[in-house]
Length: 230
Image (tube, rainbow, N blue to C red; front, top):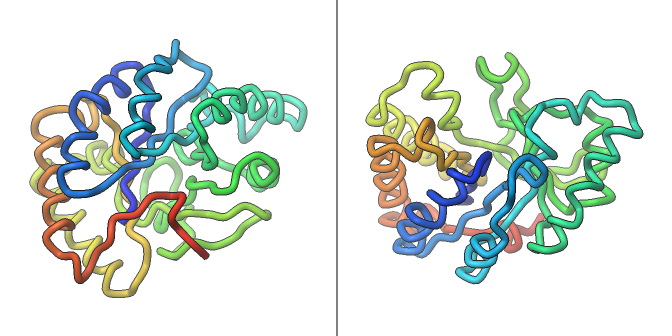
């Protein structure tokens, strides 16, 4: 079971440290947190607190404008290189494309900069584009980079489709149990902003899901990206 957050804003980072980390730590979990490196002033002290508490930092694109995968070679590599000082500063070895938009050219460039990518969902659904899933809940290699597929329904997609927090926690529970029975990796993506999982209802849904996982050690083991072996 790998918990991940996309940190798209200063609000998301503040909520991560103020709210999310403590409930993850209470069940023995640590999360991987994908931060947009070049869009807003980064509070390095907060990120240092995140890593000091045993959680991990990843790189979430460049500026979340969704242009990097489709840029020409020179511009794409310039954007990727612009994030490398941030990655080095916080020990980031994994990348996630904003809105999960990627191209093979992007993945090839990632292979020389990161160990892992986590931009490909198990099933595509309606957002961001239809039919873009990899149909696997197991890590694999693609274009010489290791891929951690997003095997769980994402909070943004479910909220966009109109599911309530109660319905979402039930879906998460059912999907996680199914993946566990097949001995796959359960990778959950949530956002810490209030418009996603940072409001009271969704935060409680997330807490309930963590409790479900923690109460079933025979079925689930919390892990970090650095602990995953292929």
